[in-house]
Image 1 (cartoon, rainbow, N blue to C red):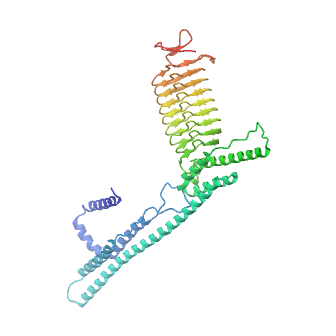
Image 2 (image 1 turned 120 degrees about the vertical axis):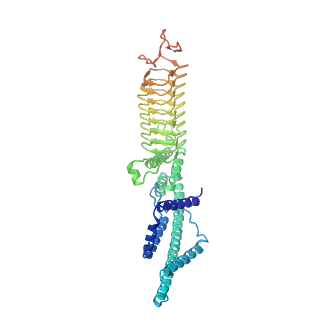
Length: 496
């Protein structure tokens, strides 16, 4: 349905509602009231014109749309202005004629028709008054045309200011981008802060400027100078060290800009620093001591990214499924309290040090297939609302699920547990599969509740690192020979 048809339906509906309200009023009341209104016809006409002016003024009122961040840049015209239809002018002239004719006849009917000079003078005055009414209606129409011309002038000025602002934004954008390509680190820093200021003043360009900063972080990082083997050329070694230190500061500044405007705390929102849930494309980027704690992130892609130093996502909110496939975390990784609203993808990622998912919330499927964990991995008090896929993962250190909640199935097929594995007081809302898994340390299955059942088909257990007896799920125990595990159905797990 078109906009014009919808407006027509609204008008018809309003008229029908008014008629429905007025219908129960007795005809005698109208007969008594209308003659009285005739004595106040001028007040009624002024009131009608006032109401029409108010409605028209509300239509012309330009208000900023809710939800937009404050902006120092001129705004474009909010909608296209339609030209005046050709039938409007003859219709306006017809309204003037009808109003003049109606007022004259109405006033003439109120004058007695006796042949009296005084009555003739009254009829002449009635004609003058009718013509005055017509002139007033014509003046009202002329006022509307004047408002229309003022509206056109304001829109023309607004479009001129908007074009000038866009031209200036483009020039600043190009200049800042050129600064990012400079060989000098201070010039690149100036380009970054120029882009930040440009995005702060122009909300509509924030996503594109964010993409430019992310593209810079995706650029190859020059190799760090080798301090163990001093170079024969001292000057070259010093220059390489300076380039590395400068590039490091530039990348740290770029990361701080992204993080600063992704935090949605009360102060950042009230001051306009928060840019909204933007998209970050950091695929194959090199991030140094990345700290995205307590940020609000939209699409977040770190496919193949390298995290040098610590990676902190404490309390971060991922509104879309983050892509950490093949990401390499050289230092500690902290996802404690993070919220994954659309699941998470950590397939083939590598954690060189400890990683925390304490109290993390996975509201959809979380995938860790073929991931490698080199340090202690903690999923304490975490919750998986959907399936949890940890197939073919390698856990070289302690893996702990303290009071973790699995809403549905959990898969650990083909995974390797080199150290302690603990499911302390965890609950499972579906089946748990350890097919072809390898247990090289202690395993403690102190499970509070499980809706499905465990499956250890093809799993193997090594007792080389065993210090104390493992606690296996209910229904599973060591075989009579003491060299394997068996279930009540006499299904055995081979022991190396």
